[in-house]
Each structure stands twice: as C-alpha cells, then as structure tokens.
Length: 363
Image 1: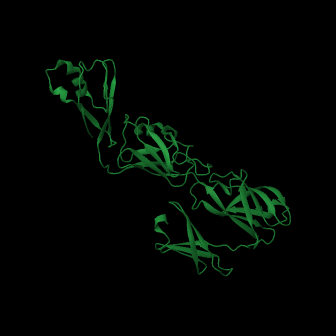
Image 2: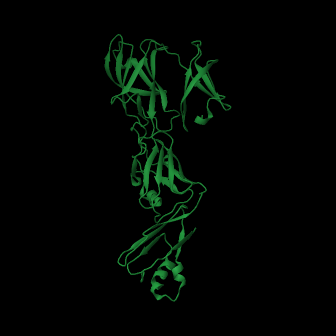
Image 3: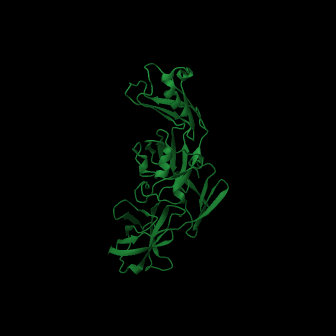
C-alpha cells in the first residue's frame, strides 16, 4: 500500500469478523505495517485476511495466553532487532518456568528456528535465555516478524507460548537516481531510512566509486537531505558526461540502515540507472577572472545546465578586426578551443584594453 493511498477501500478481518485499522505504521516499497484492533473471536478462528485494491492476502492468526509475556533485547541493548545475515545474540525473558533443560524450549523467528545457546536462569516465575538469530537472507517478505518462545514440556500438542515483535535490519537499497530539472545536481533515494544525518556534508568519494564520481564534475558536494535522500551538487564539468541509463554505483560498507547494523553492499539491488528529467531553462553560465595583469594567468569557465557531452565554441568581437596582429595568438586560441575552460596565459593579450568574450555550446 503506497502511503498516499490512505486507508480507503482497505479491509482487515480476523476470522470472519472485520477489524478496525488504527493506523498505517509504515508503508514502503517492500512492506506495509498496520496497527489493528482485534475483535472478539472464537479460539478456533486462526486465520484472517487483508483486502485492498481488489487483492486479498490471507494471514495466519495465533491465539496466545495473555498471561505469557516475552521481553527481548540485544546484548548491546539496542532492542529486539538483528540483521538478515543472522548471528546476533538476543537476551530473551519469558514469564514461565522453571526450565531445567534447553530441550524444554523452542524458539522461532517467523517460522524459522532460532538456536537457544544458553539458559541464563529460570525459576517458577520467569526464564531468561540467549538466542542466536537465524540467517534469513535479504529476500524476506517482511522485516517485522513474530518471535515465539514455546515451553514444549507443558503439552506438546498445545505448548505454552509467548510472543513479541522482532525486526530484521535489512540493508537499504538504492531505488532511484534522478537528475534535477535545472541540471545542477541529482538525488538518490533509498527504500528505507539510513544512518545518514540530515544536512551532513561529506566528500562524494565517500559514497561513490571512482567511475561514478568522475561524472559528477570537479569537486562535487554530497549531503543528506533526509535519512532516505542523498543529494549530489555537481561540480564544474569534468572529463566525463552521463546520459540516461548511466549506472550509479554506491560504495559497499558505507551506507547503513538507521541502526547502523547492516551496510549496503554491491549487488544488483545497490545500483540504479540514471533518470533524466527534460531539463528546463537550459543556459550557459560564464564565470572566472574579470581582469588580468600582463604577468597573470586568467581562467574563464563555462558551465551548462545541460549535463551531457557538449562542444564549446569561443569567440570575441575583437577578433573581427583581422588587421590587428596583436590579437592573432589570442584569436587562434579561441578558435581552436572546444572545452569549457579558457586559459589566458601571460602575454597572450598584447595590449591593455577591454575584451568581450562569447561562448556557445552544442551537443
């Protein structure tokens, strides 16, 4: 469900009884999380459904003893969360016991068995264990799953169980890279919140490999517009250009999800092809030295809002006077130049005066 769609036409039912949707907690490209009020149902009713936009999804609904509770946290106290690569240790406390042997307990993460590695303590009122989070890979249907701990020794057919919400921290994916309409920069959007700090400026080489930064021009700037959007401000035109479908690659191990547990890695999900808007107000901007002494070097730069391969043409009205021999070197330099940078070396202009420059560009 896209966030802009709202709740119109959305129906959630448990058993055959319609439930009230309280809020949309989160909605993204991979999953949507809803909070609902569960209606009174018969114990035998163990399924429900979600209907929206003509699509129906069935889900299993489990009935738990309200007296059975589960508290979960990581060993580093970050909460009930682990990475999709597995291997994290959770400290889990349930309010039943006593447990004499680990064989009396079982644990599952969305149906995937988790290994109970240590029985910390157990008495008649509570039991604390350490769990090893299983590896699920990154192709999971939902990052928020049920963690269930069962006391199998009570009744194998109907064990006493406690549940809590567990979240798999999946690395963010780059979903789009779009050039701004004025051609001055681009925005990269990720599918989830990252560990980027809003308005934090960093060197673009921190985020991108050399082949990507080469098309951003000279000395580009990168900053986080928000935790999901990285903005690139292009520098002065460089030696390379980019076009529609240019591949934008992000360095591995640099951009993490919001908790900093799992970093983006290189694979087909971590790159995006460039999207070009029809650029508006295409223009050339000329900057540089406005005065120069006889022993100085002046640099004049032409910037274009069109960020493709351009051929620049330079000229000066002064060169229309072919009889002025003092301008021949200067005019020859302009006539041969096809790049965006004009270097006026000492002595190129033989006499003092005011010179007008013209520059045009074609693709």
